[in-house]
Image (cartoon, rainbow, N blue to C red; front, side, top):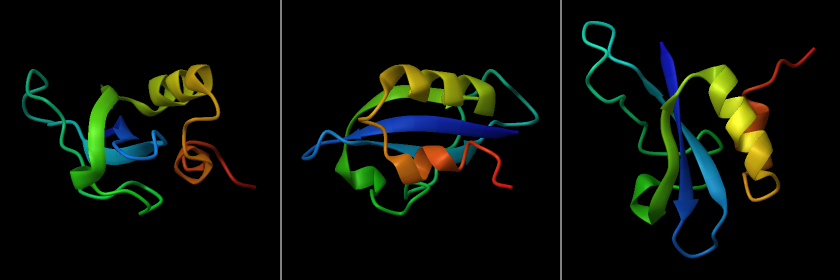
Length: 83
């Protein structure tokens, strides 16, 4: 199952989504996170803090909407269907 983590950039304050995986065999362990954001505009090395971690897609979409404009639009667009 996919898992999403929202990380705040230490210099710009912009927030980017990182995609990862929930462990299928033992859900009590934390999720993984890719080293680059979905948009590839931020690396994990640039992280100030996590705003949330290990969220499923519906929860990540809801939390990003609550935070608003500080979340990278390119990252968050990957949580929505494109027709």
